[in-house]
Image (cartoon, rainbow, N blue to C red; front, side, top):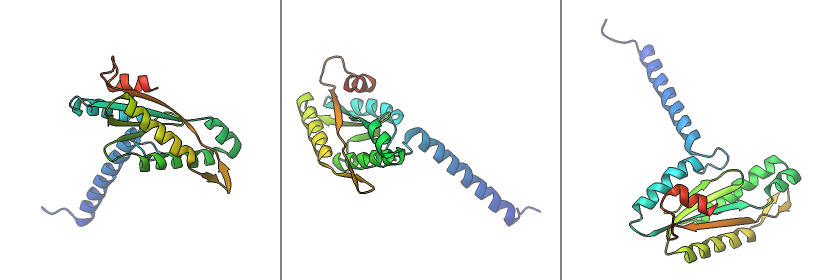
Length: 173
């Protein structure tokens, strides 16, 4: 009488796996962007505060890159093409950033990169390098080139009045 039948144990184990899978999907939906697989802006907000706190006095910069005239891409090529271009932009930023940099999908067609920097000038130089390299990329949808440019906003904790992740991201906006 003391033994649990194998069938009951398997169902219990499978139910545990379902619960774990559900919890993982719920967590991923809170911290990951479904389209690009990048962390979401919600996840980034907490991460930026931790990055600033652990920077030991070093400056931390945020770059917000927003795809220019993105609604034109959707209107001209369709939403599927727009999603494809957003994934391509995300892949570009993933390849561009250093391992220690934080990268997340912002809202709409924007992306956020947070990194340690010497000062605002060095952060602007990195943002400009990133912007110009992205502009040189060739994005093609159904054999048709899709022009992609981004506008960037840059902020750095070395500027007065920036002490939190929220302030940093707001200033970069």
